[in-house]
Image 1 (tube, rainbow, N blue to C red):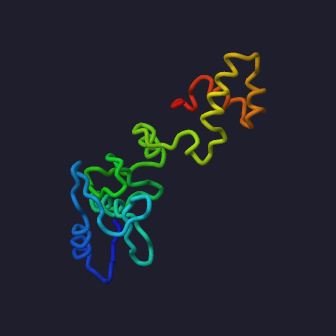
Image 2: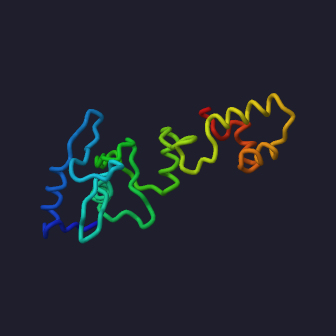
Image 3: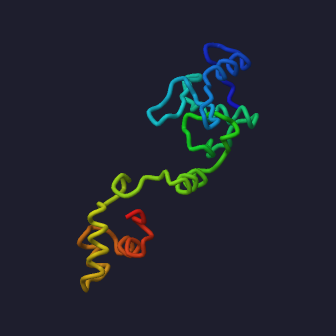
Length: 161
């Protein structure tokens, strides 16, 4: 478990201080009321390192450090939540699967990796229905791979459009 030392506090003093920074919301989350990142995650500086508050909450529950390479995942999808009952140790893939299952992933143009707009996706689908055009020709026109066009047409990509 992380052995926090905030201003030379004992572990018991730190735990007491940590708990005073938690506020219960209507959904049962214990929200971090201290310093937060713009993403909403609570942050604490310990021994010169910034540590997310929910990780400390999970380590307190587990009684050990989070396994290297693993994350503190939220069941509640609330980044400020430090309720140990709302947290679990999980892999990056677990966290990504949770994001998709709860429909929190970025979609379409809001995804920084997107090469197409909603209008272009609609145009691709319409052109395929109304013109004699190959997927490769569409891919060349819109600057994407043929496989991307195929997934758009099968509604495996851009499913929200």
